[in-house]
Amino acid sequence: METNHDSSSTNTIGFCLLPSEIIQNILLHLALPEIICLKSLNRFVADVISDKYFVRAYNSQARSTAWLFVYKKRWNRDALLHGFNDQSNRWFSFQIDSLLKPIIRPGDDIYFLTASCNVFLFVSNTRGEVIALNLVTKAVKTIPPSPLGPRGTSSWRRSGMKLVITGSDHFQFFFVDLVHNSPVLFVYSSQTDTWQSTEAREGLAGMPRICQKEDDHVFLNVIDGPYESMVTAVGLERDAHNNYAPIVLRPRFNQRPSDGLNLLQVYGDGSMLVIKSSGGGDDDGNTGVRMLNDIELWGGLRLNGSWHNWEYISKVPCKIKEQIRKPYRAMRGCLERRDGIIRAVLLSNYDGLWDIIWLSYDMRRSLWAWLPLPDCKMKGLNMAGIAFSSGLTLS
Image 1 (spheres, helix red, strand yellow):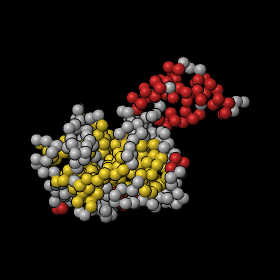
Image 2 (cartoon, helix red, strand yellow):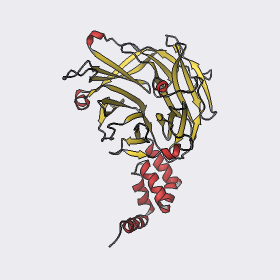
Image 3 (tube, helix red, strand yellow):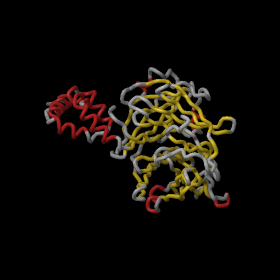
């Protein structure tokens, strides 16, 4: 009788006998974690994957794929990084403990901050250090402390942040925080291994334009309030003075406490999601329970080259809203814009049960879409970070 090992070996040999063009076409339909796994199992397949023409074709295709990553953990136990992309119907597990091992120490409490392409940032809540990890090259390093010094998870959670890839081996990390009651932008460059800080200015009429294209700026939240917030608009390219010229914006909402609605804002690449929920209690009299009412998309409006106001774009249609409307006690989210598509994820918790909503809006077609996600098995776990990352590539 043929053993499972023999069967596996026979299948591998049969696969390797296929023409290389067919093998490459099969591999092009696999997600990056599956590619990495195959590369480690068979030398012939590894050579096919390492071929420069295959790498170029796979990377070109992969750059249009959007990934959502969640980092979940049990108290005092190992954490798990899970990823889901919009081309598949399953969650993938990423084994990062061994990759972080050269940097972290026993007992370190690790949280996930943000990601972009293959680069992921984590923070050690124990030591307040930020750790950069490249999932593909497996390179890992500790980032020097920012001018604010070591920061724990509670400090990072209140800061708007953005990670931008600037080359095959380099990135920039943006975050904003209050310093003496004034918003200050901090930018780390992996190329120079240094930080730069710039105080944000009020977005008054007549101020210089900071952005030239629709995708070259990001909104980073400073203070989230129910009726007024403080946000910085940051251009991702330097101005004539070699600065990023952050501008202070103050979104105001025509909402009164008597309206009985709670507002949550999620900021990202040139856009803002406004989540309106009713709250105060459920049918059983439980306090703190909220129910989602509306989700609106807004963008920053520039008049005469300067930030002037917020422009309403669209709201989630009733048909989608009916499918995602659930009670919750706490909610957070993230938003990104790429190639004319705005993607947003809302993560909510209701008595220990987690729910993830993935929404997208096509700016060209003015079309909303909801992407149902399979269960990520997060019941009873602590959520230790969530972020988008478009374009995981082989190099």
